[in-house]
Length: 128
Length: 190
Image (cartoon, rainbow over all chains, first blue to last red; front, side, top):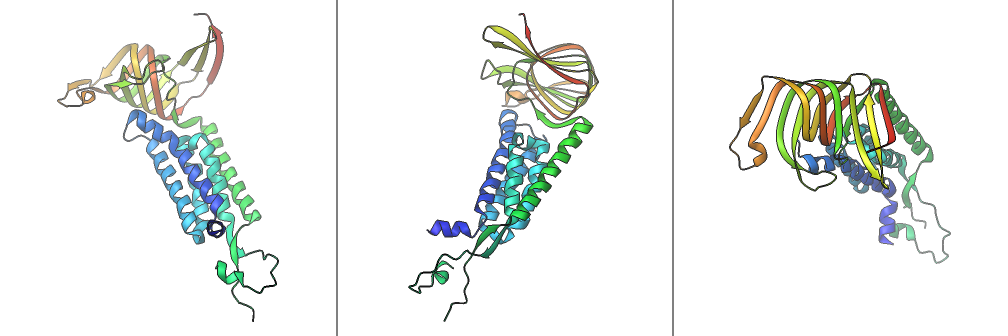
């Protein structure tokens, strides 16, 4: 029950998708680096983008209040990652766009009230 | 008395979600279309293809470096090769091909470019290079190092290769402009 409550108060799905996008984007430049160890290559941009996108996903998980701006950054960076990392063969870019959109669209609002029990116990205060 | 505290939870605004998604997809499409129009593919790795051939009539490049290495091929985990780095180059009549043995018959995947191909940031590992070569400011230098790859290096400010056939194991280019490209997959007799 604790995890469900924790999950409901943050853009969980969007953040997971964003982290997945970062990992997919990292795959291409990481493979290039492991096979060549060549400095000064454009693949370093891919490493940077992949790493920052993972960081954005983690931030969205723990700072849900900033999810809108984090989502906009995620969309922007995942599109740019096509340059230098092929956007994780475009899968990373697509995950990034969907994940970033979910983050952007996430907001806190009044919860749907379940049919209240007649016992009069106030669950509201408990869950806050 | 009723509690003034209200329960809150996260929700996703469909309107904002679809607007952001559409914006992202449009931006991605614009980026890909701009690549298509300029004929440029960014950071194209043809890694792991292994053991394919590059042939061309004429190559002119600047900023050439060569050093030996041990690298992967499709047949071996580690085979002796040389790494060629060229900063900027133009190639006439480029032809890349690789042959596959599929169920007892040979299939060739061939990529050709009828227009001059412009490449920047080329990195290529080759087991053999056959060509008529011209260099300027050619330096072959030995260095004392415990790392055998750093013991020998060849550099030149320009490189010109004519009628080349190169057995390649790895190819990476930062940018590549390949106008008049043609990809053919066909059966061959070998």
